[in-house]
Length: 420
Length: 166
Ligand code: SF4
Image (cartoon, rainbow over all chains, first blue to last red; front, side):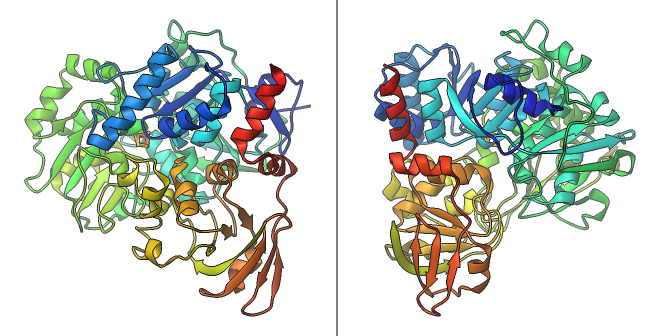
């Protein structure tokens, strides 16, 4: 039976020759993930199950990244609970402040997730790892607790939608623009419960960082997972990095999709998603006059080294507008170190930006850049819901790092070419 | 399970930040979360809602984050069930796992008015509008979800499995 890459990975994990959409399966998981918000709830549930140990101490990753370094006493208590559980269970993949990073930047970088893996995480952006040709999806804390005990979980095999991207990308257009454009086309529930498979010549040329950005936002269209068939670019990324053996699955040519979309990427401009839904994407040329108070460059969507390089390219020799705060947040300690080595921090500091230690921080309205009533922010993050970055009457506009950096310079939403 | 209460209506794409804003996620105490339930959508909701009341929403309810704090906040606020045209995937799974009854019934959403009194049988999926006398049938709950409910939530279900293995 012809299968998609998603179906092949799930079939293998369920110990079956084939699976079809709608089928309920029990699948082994290769790694499970929790953070400082979701793990405390999971730990409490885990303790109710009545087993002493997690199923495999090397396959439970706990990353305190949302409110860390601890933003207040309550967050400190939550982080402490996660830390104590990790030590008591002797988890090898607990990442303390100083060694941590934003979970979805960190796990691929550390080689903890790889092609053909099945990964569940108590965080909705777990779908990021699909960029490596893995099946990865977000779940809640109770699902995490059950998987920590069993090493397996249940899934309904999703139907797949195929997105084929043709054509050359414009200079300032990247993975972020492709995914915002896609969500703009299909809506925030356009892929509800479904696998979003990204393919075509444009994707084949897209860097790993760009692919992570795209799969990261599959959830913003309601998708169960985002996925990209692994290729030479994937191989270069995982070789010598990914700790477990891996397989490259591809979709059969006659596999079934509920829908197939074709997009000509040469016509796609940098995109900006207006408040309060990611589906409100428009070309930056049609943004109009939107003055901003803050710009944030970071998050699990766009906090990787390529993103920081892009921002630096725009900021070099420029100054952040007097009325604007620019906050740059490298995704992990490694990315931080790399950016420092490349001299990017010098450029950011000269421009008048602040550089923060890796954290989710403002992305979810946690800390390190909360918005006041009526303030507007352009951000490279993934959600612009009401109150997402602070006051319920503040606004978040989503864009790529070049657009965010250019906007920080002009003080209003701008195309990168305006400042070069 | 027979439930009864007043309907509170919400629109499309009610996201998890509306259900419980991230600024309150430094706690996982249900009572604390309940105090801020739906705050950024309707700041008064938590103080107005009465035990047994129901949330009725349009499509894609619970989109966004995986925070289980969302269904926990709703349940702890006294809401007896959520009826929507459709649910976001992670919210759907979480609601079953923690024992918050949820039903899909587009027809009821179109017709029920805010403040109507509803009687819901979560097991059969029948929804009666006691104010108008109309009856609706929700999409049946998948068998597997039913097993989880019957076991008393996912944790009890896993507990049974773990005990059988050893
Ligand atoms: S960076 Fe933002 S979206 Fe990503 S895991 Fe952190 S809070 Fe979630």
